[in-house]
Length: 275
Image (cartoon, rainbow, N blue to C red; front, side, top):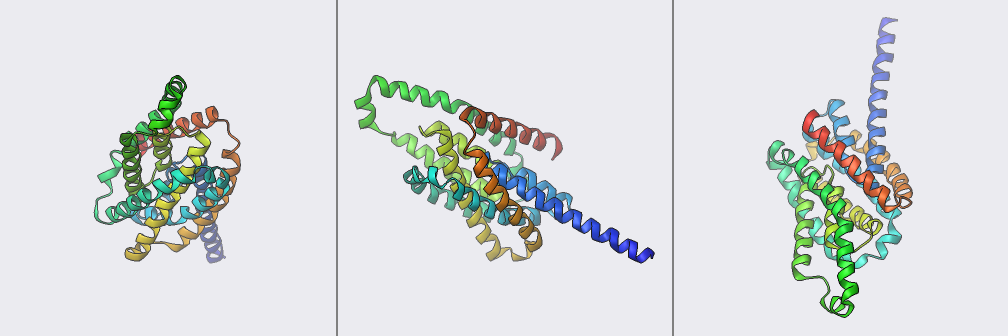
């Protein structure tokens, strides 16, 4: 009788652990599509469930690919309207993701973790400042429409956009927490696209980084992957990505920007005081 009760308790504990990981994957997938920073939900849950940090990081990265794919598909209409921008930036993101994944396997965990809060704060500043920068550019274009049309984006701005995308890709391949916030901030400052358009491109770039990082991990770090955790995160994140795309595409720009700032601020507090 005691043995049977112990077995039931153990089964309930295992079931609760699986439910927690599945739920964390769902919330991470939804948050990633709408804002970014879903890793800050799913990664700590995996660690709390007993997975070593490296295994949790790699397994989480692979599992979240499903949510990125479903979210990108949900934003396909906005993405088509910005296909040119996506084609330019995607190679930089992919290259950065490969480098970041390789760095994860050779550098200590604290190498990037110490600057994560600073990076998130910078991304939030760019998200908030983006509309002001865009309005200033629109005023200049209205004052000199012919000059603005002839000049196009400056070479310096294009270089900053590509370089910034590459750096964020490296960070995303290494850890990825709030990678989406950094991409949204970068595109808000350096392009004139709407926030929904920026979000669509962000989903593609972040998914691309996670995908190439996953390939690197499967090729050279197979022993550090827990496939049950991957499966649970993937199922939850894929469903969360579908829901996130439906919710995110209906949010007005002001509300979405406020949500990004709120979640980013919570992420900074969590990393500074509780990690």
